[in-house]
Length: 531
Ligand code: GCU
Image 1 (tube, helix red, strand yellow):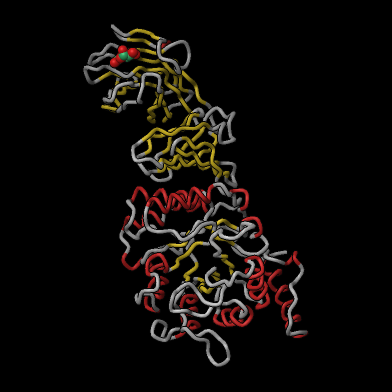
Image 2 (tube, rainbow, N blue to C red; image 1 turned 60 degrees about the horizontal axis):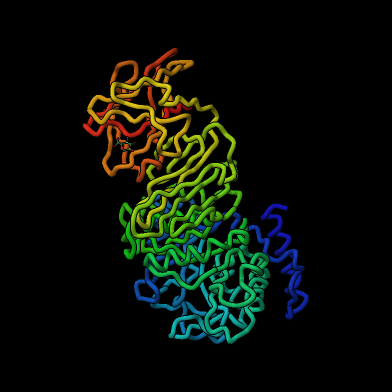
């Protein structure tokens, strides 16, 4: 049944139940949380990470964020929910027992604010706690024992999302508390995303019972705006992949991107890992003060597409070796997203293979770097030099064409060059150790079926720390000068340098000529990829 049919039917059942008896029974478990919402992880905003309870959290701020969602194109790339956190209410309920908005912060009331957010084509979310009071020391009233009254009030205001916290819970069983609010929300008949904010605290763990209860559940305590906190949340959350899926997500907490406590590299890692883990993407910075760098991260549509992939698979960890971590996310169209994440304080090469990602066997693969946007082909090896605290994210697709390998030892080598085999890991029977001189070169004869661009990847090793640049020529014409062949760390560490080269139909010559007295790197092969 479609989500809307479901909601209509469910609302009818709930309405009938309300008429029949004031003591409501839980509807059939099958009707539990499949509320049709959050088929992909929720995207939006929440003020907490930026303001906590400070006075700048107010009506003007929230309206301003809604305006920016539209004017800066955040709505266009998928951000929908504009959510408010703790401290929106007065410390006491009114005479009827209802929660009351703080008139200083929200002079027009919450209904008017929700209406404003809705008028922008966005959705509105609110916060309370599954306890007698919320977390703030001012003692704002919580929802424990008031579930239906509060849910009804939220629904009457037009709330679309509830974050339900865990403070002052009086030791009442978590499942009991969170199911009570789930059922109260369902009875309102209004579709409301239900965010369980229990911090992964109680036993049994929320991820083992969360699926029929909430649309998402916090797996950790609160995030702070620093590397240690952020990467700690990622580590705790990345082992829980099997519990996530459409309608029910692991939540490692809201984004800190743009709050100033991390470098741009670290924020890109934060955003990349959250997307890989199919985490909710709730912006936690005051966008009214955000600069181009913050918007650039938050609006990376290639990364967002990973988070919002309709298959809804959270990335799993392929390997984790001394802080060098490879994440693999299976995507709906059969592609893989791979994140090469460096948790250490110095740059490192991190690698994996298409086979390790579960898509081995194709003759070639296209790799798109989702931050730099560069593309290249590979026959299966996937690796990158990753800066300290950085993350390289590739979308990996099977190539449609094929790759033809031309070994360097089968090419023509200029005077002084030798064919060696003393450094393991080369392809074929050896590699070319060119003379250490300017002008030293290797040349391949290659065939092209038709004229046009062909992706050529040169396999090489450079065991020094100096670049060994070459000029690339095709049919006697230099088409690229000073192409870098950077150090690979060891003579046994093989890497590739790729270029798109325009070939003529028929036989072509491709030559690499050293431009420094060190000569060329050790050259292993030239791979020509089509498609
Ligand atoms: C070392 C290494 C060679 C390499 C050479 C160089 O001798 O073993 O394989 O070609 O350095 O610097 O070019």
